[in-house]
Image (cartoon, rainbow, N blue to C red):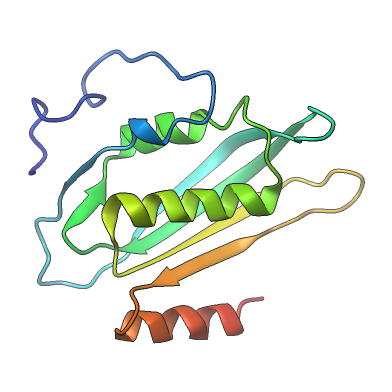
Length: 151
């Protein structure tokens, strides 16, 4: 599972952007530094989805931070996955939780958190935050501590 371009479908290949929510485009590769605990952070400043009620566009910066275990998410596949929300109607809180759950299912990380910094609509900005720490480990405790002290 190392970063071998022959095993990855998106990296180095021309791919079509999906028209709707597409978790199947996510790909992983092997974490070559499993002996270390370390953060991986993605900032996606051009996230777009649509309001499921009005159909109006919603814009956000999505921040994904995680501590990998065996698998890591491949960044081009993550970009394609996040683009798949462009025509998908979901509330802000749903988008953040769906992204987190899809990445937990994909990678089984030790710890992950996802924040959505949505631009204001009607004068109100919504910034949902969701996190997960592997049950029965110190990462579960970290998840609770970070959630309980979240701003």
